[in-house]
Image (cartoon, rainbow, N blue to C red):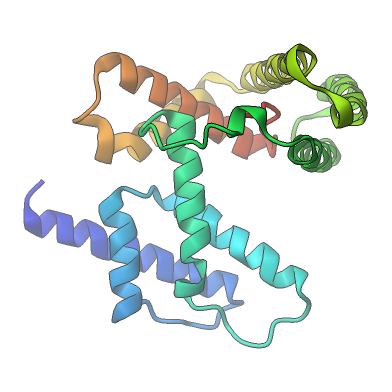
Length: 237
């Protein structure tokens, strides 16, 4: 891609962000210009997928709404930390980069695992209530929710092998739930998600081996499947 095309791509990215921010601000237009343009252009240069940036903006607005009635429109600059956090999560999920992970993460505190399970249960309940998955999914959602509720109660005092066994079980539940969600997609939807995943990976593909790209592509598709059905990531650590 030549410099002119790259600049046009960045400008288009910034316009999309500006339009999305306008919708989130209930139609109040906050221009992405000057330093704000440089900030958003930096996201584009890093390869932040547009939907990942949207999700980061959503995350900021969720906290903003939780604080009560809004007093003023949100500027894009306020969303930077959340956008970069979501981008980092996306990169970790797809294996695009091997971001440094604290060696303590594998032995995260009991409180953090318990908090994770509480968040997962909340999102899983919301997914079941949304009817997006359909009534055939209800028995699986109920069973998984029961398992997770029991795991939350057990997690307080788990150590060593017992904790490792719980983490392995969470990974297995996560894989099962994701596979059931994949099975609900028709061929057209699968092809659409695959194309979207490949578009997300375009900025990184030239530097990836075929195997690395295949793994990243599948991880990106899985993330999009979760997003479509509102499913949480159950695995931990």
